[in-house]
Amino acid sequence: MRGRSLTVWGVRLVVLVALTAGALWAAPAYAQGGTATVTAQSANVRSGPGTSNAAIASLAEGDVVTLVGRADGTDPAGWTWAQVKIPGGTQGWVAAELLDLGGTDFASLPVTGTAGGSSDSGGGAAAPVASGEGIAGETNSAANFRTGPGTTNSIITLLSSGTGLVATGRNGASDWLAVTVNGQAGWIWAQLVTLSGDAGSLPVTDGQGGGTTATNLTPVSGGPGLTGFGYGAHVDSFSYPNLMANAGMTWAKRQVRFRMGMSGGEVSWMIDQAHSNGFKILLGVVGYSNEMGNAGYFEDYARFVGEVAALSPDAIEVWNEQNIDREWPNGQIDPSRYTQLLALAYNAIKSANSNVAVISGAPSPTGAEGAFGSAAVWNDDRYVQGMAAAGAAQYMDCIGAHYNEGIVSPTLTSGDPRDGYYTRYFWGMVNTYSAAFGGAKPICFTELGYLTPEGYGPLPGSFSWAGSTSVAQQAQWIAEAIQQARSSGKVSLVIVWNMDFTQYEGDPMAGYALVRPGGGCPACDALASIR
Image (cartoon, rainbow, N blue to C red; front, side, top):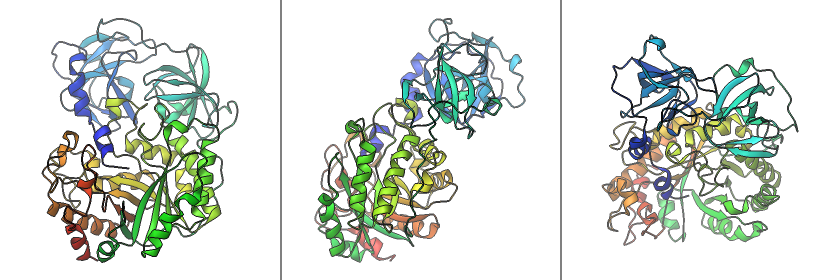
């Protein structure tokens, strides 16, 4: 929910490189052999030429690397390996089958290692793979190994990123692969597997136990969802309704922490308070990850949000930052699994009150997957793509998004002194999320804010990136963000993070607050001028 998510998971690839540079494959200096482009959706950069070596970074489709050398032969999984230099200068190894070498002759590259070798010894076995006919490959992130092609099927085990496998078949939709790992047969979601050949050439098989990509629920017919454009703020005390109204706000947000067995009536006061002050209310409902293993958890969550919907809030956000393990169990982060929860919640909400808008849970904006591993965090761009692939669009009125790490105007698309990563920019977030769903759904920013230490003193160290932002800039950028969103044609709602929180030490929520020490609200004045 808070800006602190950017502290925990905002570590970028450059940090990973700095931490792991000393452990990289040591190779002599050779003349570089041109560049190559990543053709797979993702590709691991490893410390040595084999899947048994640690993944030290992750590349995305379209990334360009410099070719340095090649490994002799192929590893036991059938991969050939290219030694590359990634942006920033770090060297590592990438499976050559995942690269477009352009005009470079792979055989002409100098031999700088032996396929299947390790970064430490230059030898050793690659990760074991099952025997038998099929296409060799490996997991490109942590992946649940299931008894059938769908999340309704039982989990055999959790495979770590880089686990070798052989794909032997696919389901009819080609979104699940039948594979064998160390002699064990099972199924893995196709997006979590990188193959050395064409998955489309695999035979179609029904598998065991049925199942679907995410859910087989037919969505309940809903009302109009969100119409037009609106904005508001996340409130704590709700002590400033007049300032909010004068600023043109028509929405308020509160977050609800759900526990199993909780009654929807427990949050009726939040709805009544907002409506009595003349505001629409968005309730973000998120549970506790340590309860999610309990039998019937998803069903009980759906029951609760259905009961809440019957009380006529204006919108419900289903969960919060489910791509990080602070909010979803470690090792189980999975957009397909989340979509299953979303589907149950959507149907419960719309069955209780079809006019309540359903907003998907906003992921934490982050690029930290390469540093911490996909058991702990998924980059949000990959996560929303996974939601779209799992059919989430049919179970929402709006795509939830967060943006709270900006230190430049939301009108800009470059110039952030940290780097050019898309989460730094308002338009980077808008375009990334809209594209993931093919423009079919509007975006709802359920958190959008700018952090400033002015009036409070120095920020905690992990938030020092915002140390130079002033209250005047916060006010200007909030107003500009509302203007940009309103005219975008892609955004239906903006909830400013936040109106009136007061905690500053450790997690400086008060630094985001529009109401500043002394009770002034420069951002409210800026918003009033653009109503």
